[in-house]
Length: 142
Figure 1 (cartoon, rainbow, N blue to C red):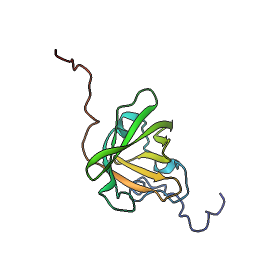
Figure 2: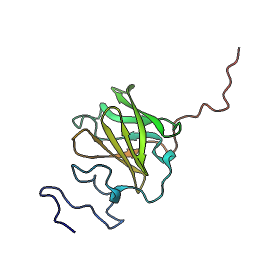
Figure 3: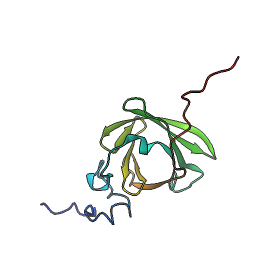
Figure 4: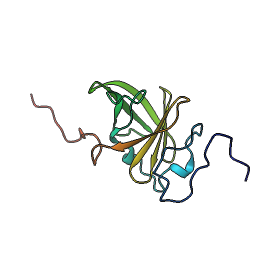
């Protein structure tokens, strides 16, 4: 095994450490941070993170919609209003990428790691225990 890149910490291998901190900066969907079980519906729901420039009022909350095949939509909140939609798709087990430059990893312990473009990874935690409301079975009354 080669020496790790200077300034980038090596990925932990101990399962107890996997969900403690975000992955090292500069890695794209590192396997050591992914959950062992793959279920794309676990990524769906509402998540809280540090927010844009670590200000939670802007992009510190995101809602992930139900999947349609490999696609989903991550909608970022700003000042409590969902206003920044980002078309997102799976790019492997427990890894998603978006057209807005985001990369997401669903990790052990029900956490999501998010990186935008070349910014460092950040850790998100779930707000609710399920996915977004389902519209199945709802009929419109006239």
